[in-house]
Length: 156
Length: 426
Image (cartoon, rainbow over all chains, first blue to last red; front, side, top):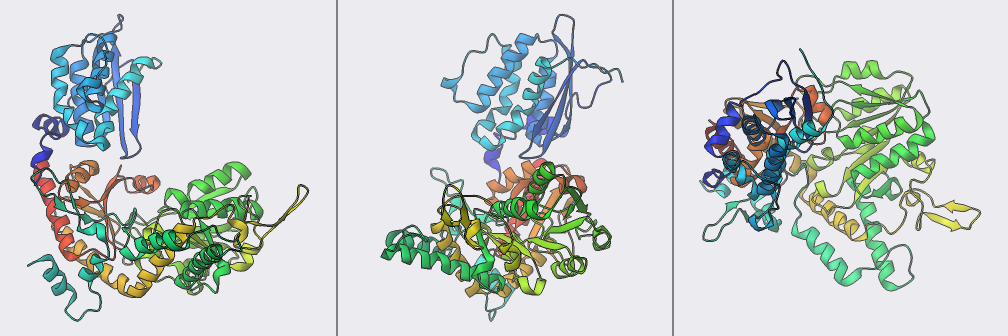
């Protein structure tokens, strides 16, 4: 019945959706931001630990959402570790283009880690589901806000 | 068994309500969705009537005919078409009055939608009758349209907003309601039927208790008015609101019923043409109710469409529609019980054919996308009732809502699609 939904819900997505990696509020972090999708009720929080040089040492998330948003957040936290701020922003730009634009409309967001971006290709199916794009990009928007927002420290 | 035969078997050969014939009145119901080159799509199973209902040919044709033959502005011209247009538009006011068993057309105010009707009451009646320290009593199952206008008024003039809690089965807590009818409460504004839970609230009892303590009573009939007969005099409502597009009519027109003596004392809501008797730069005299509340050129075409929609459901019979939908509801509730991990929000004894549900381990948004691929249109999300979602501890639900054209075969399609969704996410 759902054969043509396999492009949207690839096995990797189902796996990350069921068993999200880096899930939960970590004991320590120094940047955080919330993402809220009022249409579907998804709420997500991203927690980043930035090193003194600004690179992302660690990334976690929590919150609830659909399989797409959970998988996207999970994949994001995996690939962001060790990335510089510029690399993270470049990945976000390329990822956002992938979800929302045809190939010829993609713009230059700076050098991107091809191996990391390859992992995000499993989410390219949302391009055919305009109502689901926000699910895929929610965590990235929150990550971007955390990068640019005020520093917030937690030592719980 | 074909879907036709299944429905006939279910409702009985002699049943007066022939849903397959009814379906033929709705052109959109014969389309398929997700067609691809070389492959037919799925037949549309439309279970989202609580968001907006589909339109019968009678409504579509009435609006088309009106535009082709009778259209002009209303209440203005002395020419032939203006008179014709005015007569047709005002005839809908009579039809809306009869539909609600209101005494006359003077009780019927046309608005843009139900939401505007709430805002009209809040800004006109509310500002004239409420002061700082007064309270408006709503319930925990209100649509945002019956929450936010009162919050705006609260921030403007300092009223309080109080909330009647909802019980675990989705019923209104009537004991708490009685206790909440304190002196500060001047208006009770509660939904007649919940757009999420389906709960049909005891409107008559709500009004009786409120009136015994001198309160004014408003009901949100957006859902109740489409699922069964409404009698504003039997209920003893002071205000009653419904919207055209959920009643198989067009978007862009809503109805506010108001008790005439209350409407007559309310100041205008918006200013402009058509709502005045005379205008000078020094002084303007407003028209009588209901016209005083209808500034500017009204939704004329939509008004004619709403008239045709009221004719249509009246001809079918609101009692017959109610009975048909209740059969569908009972069948659907029974069949959904078989689905492991499926939880229905709202199991009150008096319930309209609206089923909100969650499935363990699968987000409603994913359910919506998969059901859609099976041709089944449901709504997913918060249903403009975020406080109610919080009350039941869910971020969102999937909602299947049934209308006068749905069939038991469609219930089966829904159930099978939910089961297939569960397998998919395994």
